[in-house]
Length: 375
Ligand SMILES: *Cc1c(COP(=O)(O)O)cnc(C)c1O
Figure 1 (cartoon, rainbow, N blue to C red):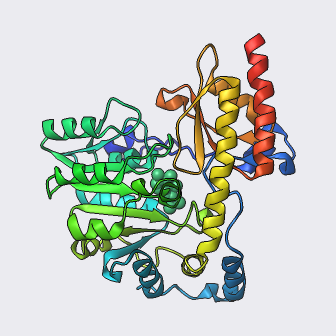
Figure 2: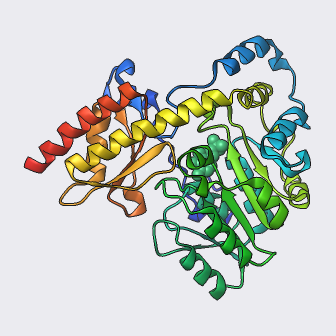
Figure 3: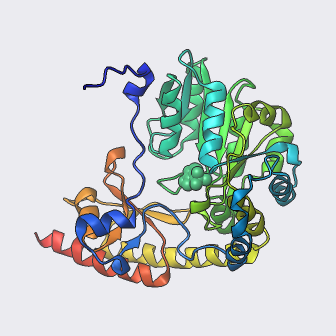
């Protein structure tokens, strides 16, 4: 029998989020041996996670029957200590993704609009569309605060502004002072979501780009700062992220949170991960050493890249090159990257891998790129 179900109209304009292709799919569809596949598509930490976290999880593995501490007291305390804020300023989500959805559902609706950069984290738009709100984007792919301000001043109904600092999928990052000057001009009823998913990388490369949640709490009651354990901490599979804001905002967002929204083991992993800062610093340091090799590689072969403050690099092509074809050919070699064709860019985003993975990427990429030139 045919389905007669009519879904809410907002679903008509929704796309299903297309995640980086999983390894299993490349094995199935391209017949590549699993051990030959390298995934440089989802900005995961190529070195895994801290050994301390692995040990703690093994030790606690029999506690799966227990619901987690729903107050998340210990994790909130640890995050609060790390950023020198209060635990009442912290909310935990199943990935910072979930905290984005809390923010969006708290403010956006069909009578207002939201503003974001033309090419930024896809989930902002997906969550926003669930509410029926109007999506506004800046003309430039990368963040341009002049454009943001211009659109903000011309549209009195903007309920949320998204700033991705640094920006995924392009890697650029605004300076802190410029961001604060911008925030000074935004009215108190507009929620500004400052997404710091890659802040561990940005602040290592350039202190001037470090957004400090403490400053935000002190000065901006309308700003929600986001952080995650999925990138530098290497815990993407554990689904744990956080939001930091003034206590009043956190209280409102808490109304949207389901109980036990992260698992007992995720909670444990995040708490222990915060105790191994050395692991994170090692990973971030190696990331930028490897990034330099990618930059030299791009210069050698003569294509552009965007100066990146993250754990990925965006490579841009011209003269007859096509990012879709390049990605597809890489895939056949078992190398998964992210094609940015859907954003109207002729570019791919490559997560910085381990030194061995990067060597292999460059070897295969070079063959494909140079062959294309001739053909
Ligand atoms: C990866 C990422 C997130 C969130 O990831 P979670 O795994 O849900 O914590 C948020 N914002 C940006 C820009 C990201 O790249």
